[in-house]
Image (cartoon, rainbow, N blue to C red):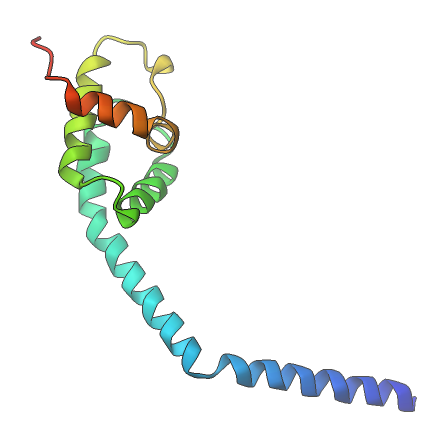
Length: 127
């Protein structure tokens, strides 16, 4: 019984020490950065809506939004360049069966380096 009481006391002291450690100034910085990150997502929301409405295939919206926010936060491409590339991509896919068009999240994750640079260098087709 004494051994159990000793283990309980040790465990309790360890948990209290961990709890105190998470209540320090580092936690406040983390919470602040999390709030700033939420604001940047809110600002990207209207941009995402505009981009998603331009993209030719409407599937997996949450995945697409997550990938879009990650790309915008990383600064891989400006919003204007992305919109230009997406417009050209959509124009190139007019009349194509939607089954053969990549989902928006896949296009951002796997196809963006090739398609975006390719689409930015091409002019819009006349249709």
